[in-house]
Image (tube, rainbow over all chains, first blue to last red; front, side, top):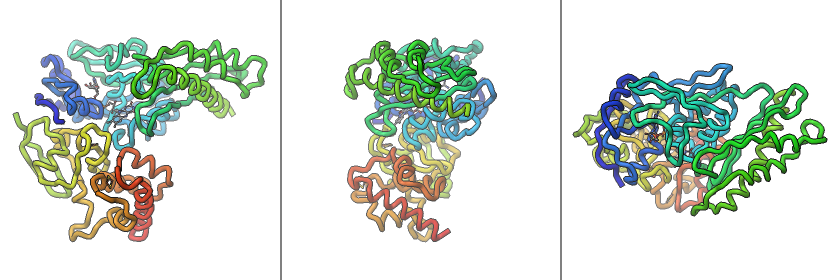
Length: 294
Length: 159
Ligand SMILES: Cc1cc2nc3c(=O)[nH]c(=O)nc-3n(C[C@H](O)[C@H](O)[C@H](O)COP(=O)(O)OP(=O)(O)OC[C@H]3O[C@@H](n4cnc5c(N)ncnc54)[C@H](O)[C@@H]3O)c2cc1C
Ligand code: FES
Ligand code: FES
């Protein structure tokens, strides 16, 4: 099918884009179009105005510092995936992007667009959530920073106001002695996942686990973050460093998710996947943390 | 409300007046008459409509022609040499039976052309990852895999 008619705006600057969003009620932002255009083609959405930000060069940025990675609204998945310095500061970003769709889709789709789209089965919202990252929003009224915990309100619903543009997203750096892992199960390679997990394990100076957290996708209306400090204590009780048993974490996570059934998988299978993926991801993140201190 | 869209397609400067909602795939096929680009699903899943934009493979069904204005597009019609000699990737697909009905082929050819530019000697896994976004209902993919490796050889020989 074809999109219904709309009025097209192609601003060249951020101010111009915010001006159109302020003036035209019901205007939608068009970034990579890899989620929006399918919705328009299927006529699930029919906005009266589209604000195409692809010519706003000032949004095409990636800033890497020791604090973390600031991804501008026009940075495509592929460009962020290839940025070696971003992967060094926060490896979860690259690990997760490799599971987003297919390479050809990643050439156009943007990281910030994926957050704004707020699909509960998408990878990057779970990464932003588990890292406690932020989205920077701008409108003609001013700017504000929205914490990940407040950004995702429901399926395909973010905290952005209709006249707001997400100009960047901040993914905090991994603390020292931290290992990460990203795992998911999908029906076919590149599909949206049935369930997935972004895991972080931090060691203290004595190589004891001092922090363990996981962010989940596909198991709720919004990304879910579970603090696994409690099962981490059980995981290392009486064991030498590096030989942790994360099976208790699997049970712990299973009890805390409330997935739904759909045509792809029923709730009990998703819950099962959460357990399996948690145990594997925590193991892999622990191994990566030890690898880093060696 | 229509827009004047000017872009380069297969090395030729082209223009047409179209409504903003015209997909690049329809722009190529209907407005420019380049029907080599196929349309299967119009939601980004099948990969038939893949073209090269500034050298990178993209879905032409997930882009408006107005967004592509000013860019450089290469479609399957632009892969062969000006005298009609098929490109190494096209010859490899022919030699290895990398197609049957040919509906998916324009998308595969564009995707693989870019893949081999990026990675001239891909492993089996890298080829599978590279073409994972293109569906083929006929071949079972094995001959497409062979075609990609054969194309790598041909490109190497002719370099
Ligand atoms: C076949 C296929 C498979 C896919 N598989 C996956 C997958 O496995 N995992 C996954 O995560 N994604 C997947 N995607 C979606 C892809 O990752 C999208 O690129 C991404 O979700 C949205 O980014 P975009 O830049 O294309 O946004 P667009 O499609 O342009 O926009 C999406 C939505 O976000 C809004 N928006 C975009 N940018 C901004 C902004 N800066 N400020 C305010 N609002 C904004 C738009 O108005 C729109 O509502 C898939 C897509 C396809 C076609
Ligand atoms: S027609 Fe574009 S991906 Fe199927
Ligand atoms: S050759 Fe028929 S779909 Fe691929």
